[in-house]
Length: 257
Image (cartoon, rainbow, N blue to C red; front, top):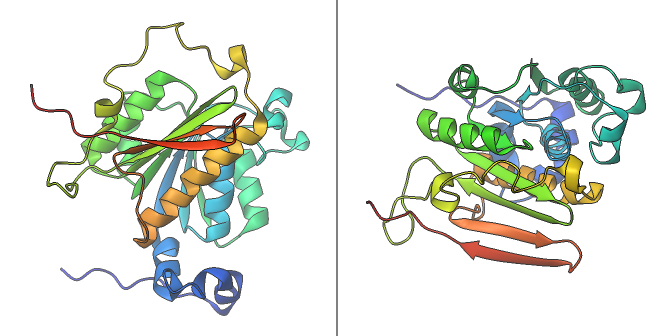
């Protein structure tokens, strides 16, 4: 069965995305791929805010947002997609309003719910790619396991205090040595014991740090959608904000038991 034709770009969209289209690596075909893409973002918080903003600006056709929280004053130090006037309304609604103001070519699917074992598969199955911007280990592992199960790529990131990290998980394929791509559990086999790693509410986090990691997550998503560059597959990118240093740790598929 032939694949459907890519969506066409209107004159307005050609002008809006001109800086993408002039790039030989992206061009018109890459921009059409972005328009056709359906991306699910878990969390409209510190990481999700820049992810959503940059995907919308890039012209991703459909962005789904999963979040059951409302905007509070303490969010605004880092969750830059929300506004003071949004305090008290659902984060999904606030994010949708911001996207509409930025780029009305983008469709937002609001999933005002918490990702759980009952809804995870049905939510992820409707998308081409999932980006995890959650702030707890239960959601991270559930997202990673579900993405693997429904066979869609995952871009996952985390932040704390002055440090951040991100990586890309592909459900299929092999590396240059013919070994299957590693999963999230090859990198982090099990979540840490409860209470061992303090939350951002407990330990704090610099607001701009979430912008660094969230923007990198958006960049990895754009690379995956357009098929350009080398995604962070089998590589964990580490960022030390205080030292202004990036490091990369490589990891591989664990050998079979």
